[in-house]
Image (cartoon, rainbow, N blue to C red; front, top):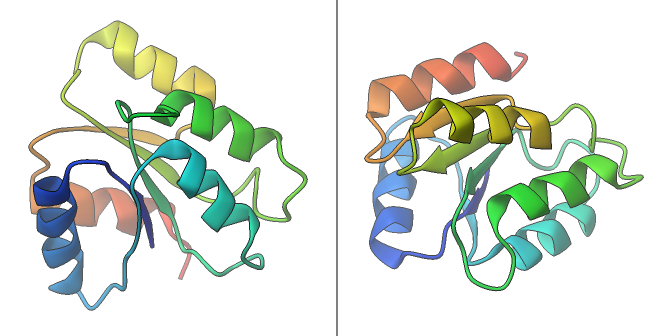
Length: 123
């Protein structure tokens, strides 16, 4: 699992939540790093990407657009989930238009995160 999150406490919490279900997490502290990590690994390396929307250097929407537009074998199919404090309809709509598959509001409820990932990740 690739987690793009610039706030250390949020990254720790999400990593612990996913770790409770034995999911490994690699952290990118901004969108640019997330793009690099995704594109520098082979197809299938990550099961999904959890993308914070507000990060320094490159936000989650821009990082998502770059990943989706790349020629990486997984670019069009990897599940991508927006993590954001913004839960307004227009924020959800912007996330979906950028290529995200789901939109979760912070603070993220563990069961919502598990359920979303189970629906998006093929067994």
